[in-house]
Each structure stands twice: as structure tokens, then as C-alpha cells.
Image (cartoon, rainbow, N blue to C red; front, side):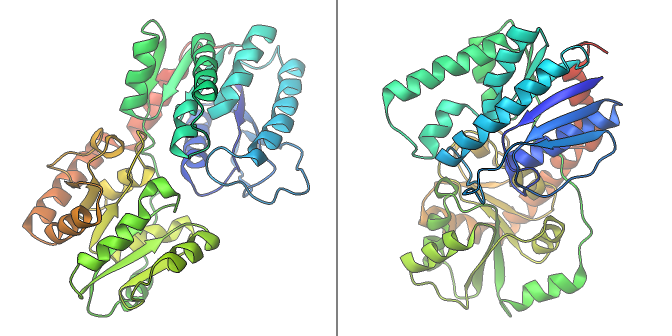
Length: 381
């Protein structure tokens, strides 16, 4: 089956939604489908047999796109949706269905109504909730408008994929008659650990126990709380953060004075190196302070065999529990207590149970099966 997919993100870029889109595409290709992907004019080139990437017009002033809602995304979405809409019209007799991500769901609803092409909406988050999480607006009118728009997209979709249990509950409570699938973003390419890279990582903090945070530095991730937690940790405990933009790192360093012998903030590194960073550290931490979507890092953390410390919020607790992680309140003192506990026997026990759970429930075979179920019988072959 030939699939029209619309992804309003930089593709490919090493962050949450593009990773999810990449593995959706790979799974569909492995099932024998072909994919025409319409996406932003930004990101790394990806070459996969059966995938054709079409990029929209690039406004000259846009060099990158930050995570979350932004004015730049409005411009990019306008040109992307125009191009994808033309493609839907031109290929309306050949596409089995249209597969949309995030705000492209509005386009998918339009394509279904105008061209009678079945629509699968891949829901990575609630768009009204995004506006709140990113402090984009607190206007009840705007949020209400977005909620009605989201309802229109969900109502019109033939199939819906959700990426975490909370989103699944949200959609099925609104539309219990819909075919809704829960496909968590647990699939990740596993890279071999580089022993030399591990030595280099350990050498950053000679003789110290290392806590790793791997991910973006958006405010909701709670990195400032984690940095403050270092003040409550012994001198032999160091924090290594990997990810984020250079300007975010500069801002964090300006806001507080942190001992460079105990804290290191590194920018994003190639994906293939993350396994080595995890192997080179002693405890893994996710200090997120709000949200409902499960961070992608949690799935990699669980399969690593290392103790995981996470804040006790819904983003984490819909996947983690007290047997697979050390859950703490989202405060500096709470994170510090959890990290210290992770160095002990409880950390060893939680790490073993998390690894066992991850290997059983987060396998490539299971992911492929779930994606196949979500498109089974949909569209024209």
C-alpha cells in the first residue's frame, strides 16, 4: 500500500517526535508498504528503501525550529500543508490512506473529507496541553478553541495511534467507539558501547560517581531542579547532562554558579554515542516537573541495567513504579535523596527489574506487531 504521511517537524532530528516518525516509517516499510513523507525543509536526510521524502518551501529567515509551538512553525506548516494537500489531490486514487502526525491531523481531516482518503492520526500529544506545557498561552478562549479543533480531528479520524497510556485513556474516554491503538515510543536503535568513549566519560569526573541526564533542556524537563539538587549531594557525586542547545546551556550557567568539577553540561551528541554515555555513568535521572507524555529516554533507561531516578509525576508513573525505579518528589531535595538511594541496594534491585520488564515488553517484534495492527484493513491496497 502507498501511504501519504505528513510530519510537521524537522526530519530527521534527534528528538522525540521525529524519532517516533522514523520508527513508524521503518515498521511500515518492513511490512511492504511504501511511504511518501511530506515534511519540513529542515533536518538530516534519511534514505530507506520505499521511502520518498518531499520537503516544503523554506522561508529564508528560518534556520531551525524549537521544540513546541512557535511562530516559525505556523509559517512552515502553511507551506507544508499546501504541498501535502496538492499531493493528496494529485494522488487521491493511489494513496491507501493519509497518516498524519501532531498538528497535521487538521490536514488529514480535510483530506479525508475532500478526497475521501482514509485518515490515521498519530497523536503524540494533546495540542491544547502543549500550549499550556510550553507556556505559549494561558487564554481560556485559545485553549478552548484548540480543544474543539482537537475534537474535530479525533472525530474525523478512521484510526488513532496514541503514544502513552494517559493519551490513550483521554481519547478512548471521549470517543469509545473509535479504533484507538497504544503504541509507546519504546523502539530505539541499539548501538554498541565504545569502551574508549566510556573511559573518556569516566575521565570527566575522576574518582566520582556519575549521574546522567540525557535529553533536551526545555523548562518542563526540570533541569534547573536537577542542578539545584547537586548542592545536596556529597562531593564524590557528579552530574553529567547531555543534550540541549548551546544557548540553553549558556542560560543555565548564567543563572547559577555550579562547580565545574562536579557538573558538566554538554550539547547534543550523535545518537550512536548515547549507549556509551549510559554505560559510562552510574545512575540515570529524569527530573521532568510536569506533563503527561512519557519521555522517550525512559524506555532506553529501563533497558540499560542502570538504576533510574524519576520524579513522581504522571509522565513517569504511567510506565515506572516503585519496583522498577526510585520515584521522588520534583524538588532538589527529593532528587538528591533518590540519587543517593540509587547508589545502594535498592538501586541494584530496581535496575534489574526494569531491565527485565523492558526486554519483555519493549521488543522490536512487539512494536512491529502493534504498527501492523493499527493499519490492518485500512485504506486501499
